[in-house]
Image (cartoon, rainbow, N blue to C red):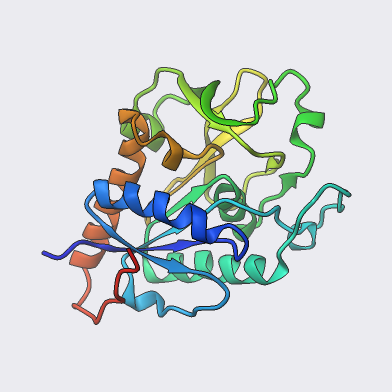
Length: 236
């Protein structure tokens, strides 16, 4: 069986830098990647799973919030990714959200965000680094716990926004010691997991690699349940 095809959404500004690293993690997990941004449209039927990548802040217009002056927005990407999440669920495709992608997963399902998350959660330590300096506490009996274990994880952190009210069918999968939500997951299929950190930078950590393996495994299972279709070519 050929490797499952995972579409990876990226920013127009930083996609050239982020996509190769995410693609490496997908390859290590047994999949192959194709880049998806606003300049390229991909048929959802031609892929097996999706990673909604990190990058720009999400416009508060999508969830009824108020704009803060520090926000860096990309409305075209917002529209694209919201549509991808909705289309993925309709087609039974699994989704992994990374940082902004976790937030988009929540917003696409009707949830809201804290734009200034550290202003709300004053006891949450504001690390801004790709190094694993932040502690997150995994909720027991969640899909994340089954994938990566229930013990606390050391992760990185680059975000300023965070999930506030949960979207439809989602539950909290991890928080930091200050109470800020750090991971969310869908309570039913198709597989959907959103993490506030950047596991693609932590490819040397076994528990972080398991996140990509779980996505690829779910994508392989979803493809096995469908008729074979023409697949998009890898950009690796």
